[in-house]
Figure 1: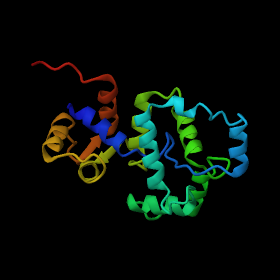
Figure 2: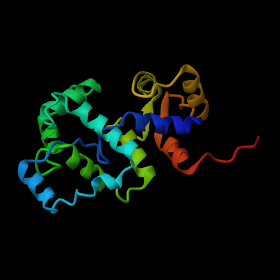
Figure 3: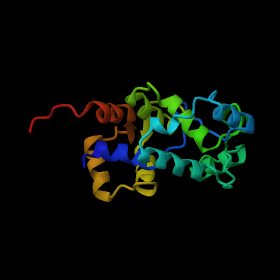
Figure 4: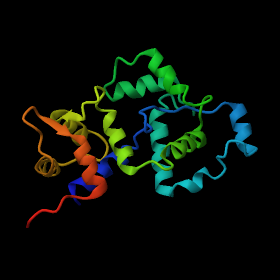
Length: 197
């Protein structure tokens, strides 16, 4: 498997619980559920928007985010899941902004609908760059090699030492140890540049 395919597989295997803007979701209130059942929510065909394997990945992501397993993603769930990802100093206002992305608490169907709405018409390169931007809060366009290596070797579909060697051969860090993730995203979505063999 090409290293760019492995990177894409890694992010897909993580079932990243963040949307294009880097926000997480929560469950819909009973009123929203009634609207959806009556057809107002437009979610009756949400399952047809995704392949079964994608639905399963989103279900796994939802389960990971729903830390207390009550079927609702709350601010406490978000705080807990972000802490497991190393983000310990998340402000309460940031958590509130995340949960306000929805009109109320979200069950899995609404969670899936929101992902469908966010991903509909999204450029695949933009979606991948957005996933990397979550790891680049200063928006520099670069991520430290050590950080990427730690994530790829300890999370989700873990890279082997050989795969890491291949990654650094394909995308060598600069002298300061930074990786240009936008270049990685470009190669993933557009293919590698022609090389003389």
